Length: 314
Image 1 (spheres, rainbow, N blue to C red):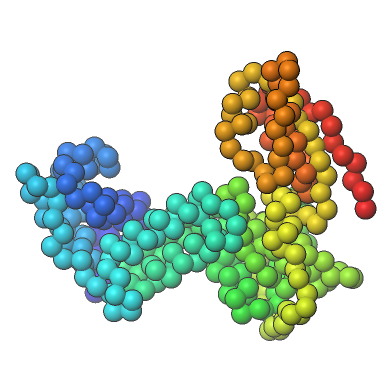
Image 2 (cartoon, helix red, strand yellow):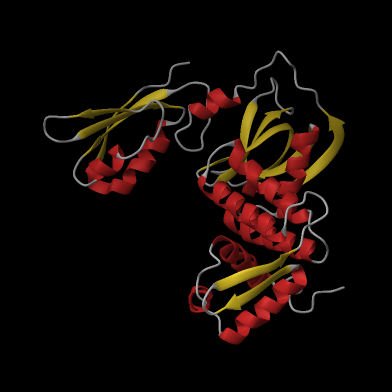
């Protein structure tokens, strides 16, 4: 039976409904006026939303003195997660994917889609469309079908061809690869893969939003148990997104208002801070691509100056 009040494709309203479930579950004692102000909706629109949520299996009642009461939160048959349990988890995963780095953050997107996929139709299709459009496509610029195909290829160890757009000259080229990991750095999704069309094969990084097409080859690959892909070591060497086996050091002098900002967090595991007699701060790191440090420091304008960069040694 089709949900007449929230059809597939009505993404904006569905996002509001899902966030409404989350907020009521977290803070049922809040006032109706607060909900209306938070979501910028009228009282009549709220009651329309309330009726739609009831059709989905989330029945609430608002009482003036005591706030919201959850009367029914229908269980789904697969995992015994209620609707609000799933939505709370999905938004928690969204926060993780938006703020975290590494494989875990990218994995959160896949888990979020699985949680949405466990619901009954038509809510399942509505929520998957919402999740893909609001998170995978809008937040990271990756078509959902590209992300899903890559996720399956990594999990099933399938050799694939990708049509990839290179930075710099922005030309497209087909690459034959064995995909190994999807990960995230600085809120950008990347694919770590072993190239098959090079001699010798090499470990490369591909940005997901530059993969324009994927072809399955029908071939699977078996990783060599004795071969360490070096992913975690290379990732440790990255200051931002560039992974590398070798590192170079770079030193930046910070002055003025930039100093407390630089000192307030750990920017890289290798960083060293040296306070100078003139009040300036020397910031030194050893990373795979020092220019990422230089570009980062430019946000501080005249309060940042590059002092030294180590020459690359083979």
